[in-house]
View 1 (cartoon, rainbow, N blue to C red):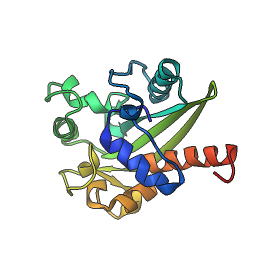
View 2 (cartoon, rainbow, N blue to C red):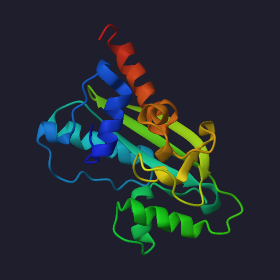
View 3 (cartoon, rainbow, N blue to C red):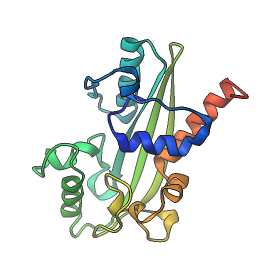
View 4 (tube, rainbow, N blue to C red):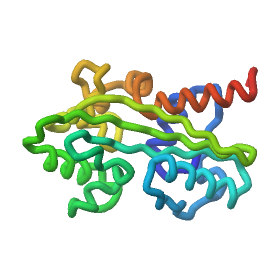
Length: 197
């Protein structure tokens, strides 16, 4: 999996269970920053997976995830991890800064509807495949819960009865999350290609 995000890697490993062994960039000796300059989730995921495939000669998958908030015209979207820094809040990939920026921008907003969308790109045997997972929900007015990562303390999926992702167990979150849904489609594709493995 082409990611330097240990949380993402662990989450995907939990979702896939013992069916697959998922290796990270450290397992193939990749230490460089992988380009992520596309203007869509699909583009970024394909860019990362293709980079590893071309430069390391291995089949690879990568994901990109965006939080799309209705009142912000679907922002931050592709800039989800850099949202705070782009608006003068902390450093890039700073979860606390991102959350504070989001809460401030939604102050007095007519709606707090949002969705998380994950796109997984697989580059295997020279072919490209895309798998999407979406979860609808709302942005809570304040942080709730200690688990998870990123925006989990303020995102409440519709299926969770008002709980944030950060208030859920990993198993409960993975059962309904955007990454869980995309990863399950990805796994089904691999099993279809190689039944019995």
